[in-house]
Image 1 (cartoon, rainbow, N blue to C red):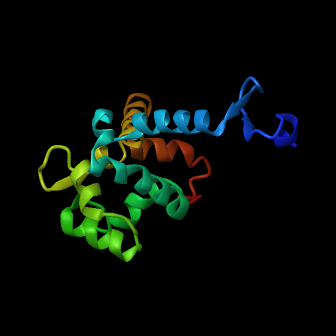
Image 2 (spheres, rainbow, N blue to C red; image 1 turned 120 degrees about the vertical axis):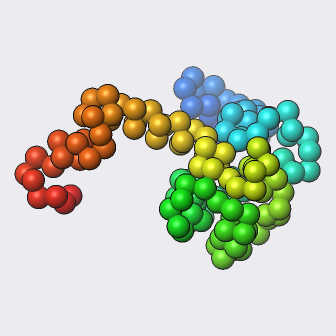
Length: 157
């Protein structure tokens, strides 16, 4: 086992080089990735509100797979924005165990009283915008893209 090979130290192999690394180094790497994902200034990590965010992301991934899947469960009216009541009621319905008010404070960065998809899942929103731009440039519209993909003209998948 890896533990016996390392003289009893608890080490993991890193992904690319195969060198052992400590759990602490792995945690630091995960925190670095998490900082990049945060929809708020990563310098806020030492505040009480921001400590809730890693818990929220872990819960989201464990229970819903990713932020986009959770968004779809929260944005029931498909408006691409969440009002505070919609957000809070949705997370309670889905049994989020953490502090919903703290998550709201972090995500409603512009303090408008709504959270946009861009505020909720910035990386996914950027990917969606890039895909939409590509579809418009290449096909003229999303509808024309779907028609191009539907080679047998069945209208289905």
